[in-house]
Image 1 (cartoon, one colour):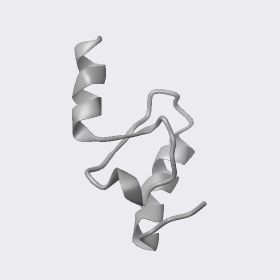
Image 2 (image 1 turned 120 degrees about the vertical axis):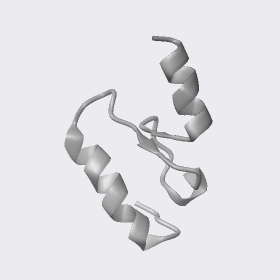
Image 3 (image 1 turned 180 degrees about the vertical axis):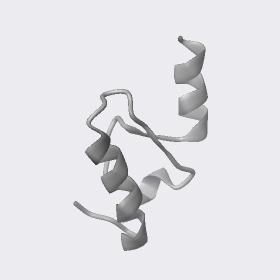
Image 4 (image 1 turned 90 degrees about the vertical axis):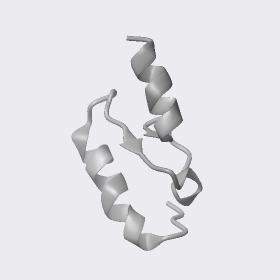
Amino acid sequence: MDFKDISDLKFYEVVMEKKDKNAKLVTGNIKDFPVDKRIVTPRELLKLIEKL
């Protein structure tokens, strides 16, 4: 995995450990994380919630 800021790794690990397909990591710094459907911006999370 490529992390621009290694201090973000702990947050990514929490989401990966959850093993829930609906678990999300919400961040304003999406570019600092690997591409993964579980990593979303606040705006993307709001869109997901609206679909419920």
